[in-house]
Length: 190
Image (tube, rainbow, N blue to C red):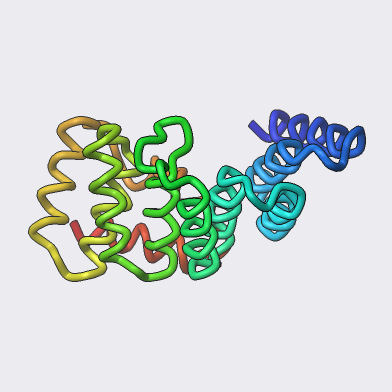
């Protein structure tokens, strides 16, 4: 995986150098930076995408995604809301995980009710995934809604019996260990 991340990073840099006005190259660069643990560079690349195509909903939702992992929850929520304004049919978009990114951003910002709402909509529309369920459980737990958290945890274990907190690589992409620990601690309560 480290070699793949390095190769993706080099190719994304090359794409940007070939045409620095092709916004999608910056998304790929942001993604490669994130996997290398270069959160601020990922955010900068995503911001370059938005600067090139300010009316592109995908650019804004992607910016929200990278801001979330960089621990900038409030800014992430703002970017996601902007994307939703630009694409009012986002609720039907299976190809761009607007609801997932909204759930992430709201969790990181501490907006747990909004996070729960986004995760429930995502699960209802597109089905359960480990990340969706894990962040939903953590959001319930952070609000002290322990019964709902336990019910969701039982559902997660029914559909993913091999799930464990140590396998939660999704939680390890955060820039700040406090964000990772908050998620994992909330999950451990249940």
